[in-house]
Length: 162
Length: 71
Image (cartoon, rainbow over all chains, first blue to last red):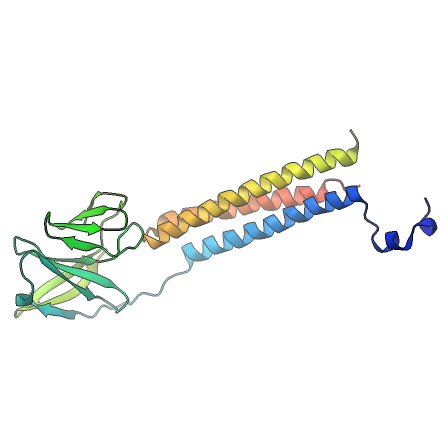
């Protein structure tokens, strides 16, 4: 069949069914590779783009020492208003403080006075109160510890121990 | 078997491979996100490196696909 004898529509769309399938597969591979590039880019951006952290941490007054009874806790934010933390006075009277963000999936942990443990209600994670180490559930890393000091009856947060 | 039908078979197989790699990359992205949210940046970086390697494999497959069937 010569080109002159082709119908008009065939001149406009010179691709046969079989060719059409071949082009579709090749285009599909191109689109999938483009998607692959986008996913890889998102993964690299998430892992390598540095996050802004406050370089200098200012000590912050949390509460008065007398306001926290043995076996109780209170929440505060340190070093910025975006960083929730939990201050715990253990039944022994010892004061400890940790980040309130669970190291599993960032749920808020709470103090459970009945067994002196820190509990994550999302996935039943448990941390010990002595060092914030994970002792049950899915979390595998300890809670960041907040360094605290008692000065003249006031409780101050002074730093973070990662 | 004609050369064209052989090319179609090769392209179909390539598409399946590329699709499987994209699915693995999606899984890597979700686990990296979980690691970042948990503060484990090292694991997220390993996931990102693996994702880039898979992208390179996809690029190689695409290059091969662009040559298949061309006369």
